Length: 536
Image (cartoon, rainbow, N blue to C red; front, side):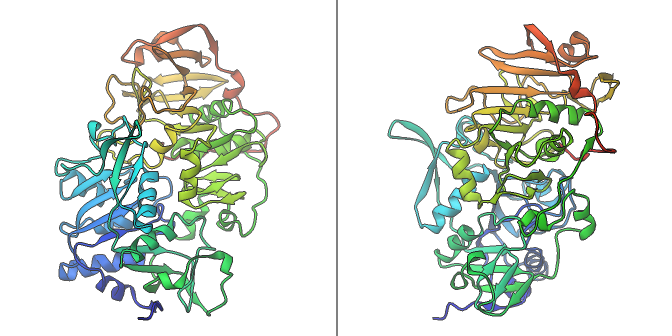
């Protein structure tokens, strides 16, 4: 039987997907989105009702977006038609509650789970190795733990993906290996033998393990590419998926990124600097001093020299890099890492970094993270409780999911959580002082978290210190809960901070003022450049 892949249309690929299939799709926002194939599957289902009853697995949400809520009807939202999916298991979801896949989950249209990104990537690798299952401590004592909800997202979802077990005296979560019948992958180039390269993309996102999970189960691997080139013309060092693994090659016709280059132009660096093909020139950045940039600049003060610094989604990924450059940092000042794979360089929205030193595959990234390789992780928060535990994954109708947050927070040596103290307020920086014009409709400090994404009391945490930075004050986690250690200039302790927190907070007897320099633009800088005004 020939293993030679076939060049086919997206409609032909969609026709080959059976009902009830387990389908795995790697990708990140609009990057590596196999939009042409996803659209063809959607069209086939709407025309014929097939394939139905599928189970969808993916580590990161795929839809047209660039750090904002994105565009409905794109990416994995195409699979949200009633009957097409029986179950979805995702590492993250759309930030927009009304987008189709989120709406389907809220409407109990299908079973739905949110589990950590590293766990999903690990399960793909276990499936590629044809292992029976996977043991992991990631997620214990969080909402992923079956005792705290098991990552279930709606009333229709009643069974647990994992079970609590004890192995050699250590508590673990055991996940049976999922069956992957179909892998759908977006890449850069394929040659006539089906060898697949990702050289025009900023990362590979576990594509090889995803493909092997399907191939080694006797399934199919469909790869959407920009172009097909002559056999032997690809650099073998850039081939990620060998041709004998691939079932079909499909030329890309659609993009998950509306606006094309206009969306790319909204970022700071050119696309080719994300892939390592060429390097972008150094930028001189002056910051417009806003509450977000104050938070970012204070977070950078928590990073010791030589530390490996992970940046999470939201404010850290969008603002920290800009703040660092605005303060005159060079590429050697910080050693940034983001979960999508880039190490070094200047992280930007979408999980990319300009001028990275290295781009690792996601399974390798999470091996590094889970093994304790992160010195400092700077992350966003949506809610904080009296224990210092954090929710980022679900609040109100928003259901962004946990992504790699659980993997990271359980294993980093030092944690720095960033965000404004209250949502819906009006806070500005004037003359080096914080002015609270409106205190905020919703405090982000709450008596009860809507979802337990980071459990500050969990016994498996490795963090030696936990810091919480807002535009008005800085807190540390002490033995009995939160301790307020710094206050911003211009802020009234009682009115602007303590009255906005619905539980007692210890105020340090050595309460300090946050460094006034954080609230003023650095001297001798070029014309101001605003930090990205993106959703945190």
